[in-house]
Length: 147
Image: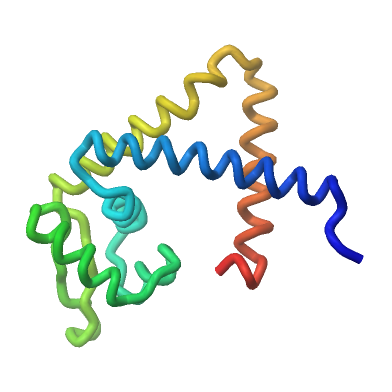
């Protein structure tokens, strides 16, 4: 048995929402002088040092793409590479202060643009949407084809 019309509607709706948010992120990244890929890379580095392999996995791309992205961001002074404390053969990518500030500006701009249309919604509805979106993200993260 194939997908139901409801399955298609759910998928199309989520894909449409994803497309709209990616458009906001692309617009805001370009406004800050970044490509969408560079902005996304800054955001996934933010929680802490990451290896090239971890970044490739998080961004669903090849390590060779990460090498180029990191190189361009490093030349701009937004990230730096550092040897791992326990294994100097491993290189971590970390944000510089300038990179962290730019990443924060990007996140704030995206958050403002995305959240603004929901400002008139009751808090309970916003909380429900957030909970459902978080649950959907967790479900898709655990799906083998999503990685």
